[in-house]
Length: 361
Image (tube, rainbow, N blue to C red; front, side, top):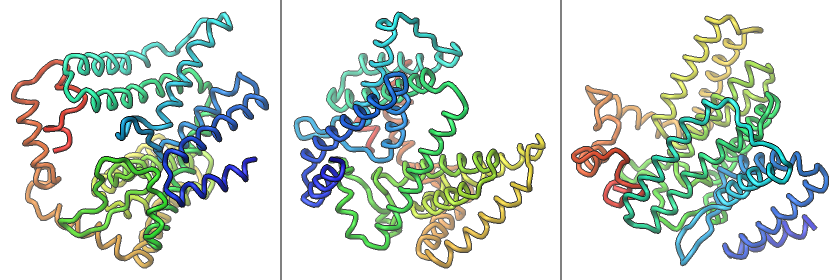
């Protein structure tokens, strides 16, 4: 059955039928969840669905309403799982306990702020509603994690899932680089809104992967790099050095300066704290530094074009006398728009979830 569904989905991808592909995908997910319930029982299904959500985040399949992007399948599943968790407790005659309670203060305040801002600024209501639903799903996912994940092994499992998806994403980035024609088969993850695939001004190609945004992809790889380092310190397995190498390569392929600088700063902070607290055993710090250095050398010889693109962007940045100026970080026009639309007449709950003049400009 699974093989037949895989063949059908492959044919749909080749034919470019997004709607049919989405329907078959949902059927496949329903069958998968049904099999998990049958095998593991209801008590473990929350955890399995959560694992699926985490794995699917870098692969956003957008459902459309009236010809426009509405929300992703992942977002739907987050709301679905949240409702399961909330409704299950009355049937099981259990109280929903959320500990520690202080961990819920900040996300609750964010939820209130987003809701009030959305209600008080009903502009571009369709797009505002889509952004509101997407933002709230992130808060709900946070609550789901706190109520579902109970021990350290579950946390490690989620981290491993994140790293696996990022290694897969780095493979996709490399595949598209070597065979550009492959990119058309990834259009099932493509939003209808225009996506900047490369920096035309500097003529530097920047990888966008399946998330269709090079800066967002770079942030994912940055998170993966830090998680790889953490697991390497804890388990001393060299497989996490491989995931670190893949994430480093991914950052370089996105040619994103902020992710590169943050990786260096984060690595320096981690290595310093680990050695101050005397948590470094078996020379892990020295191994990480040497392996990262060797990785950079390998990437320099294997992918000189990407290294050169990042070097050019760094050179442009360091030409400025004030490295923290809006011009240096290429945000001059953004700050002009922010000052014109927000800072001149500030409001307590902002100007809404979506604002064409400020957001996309």
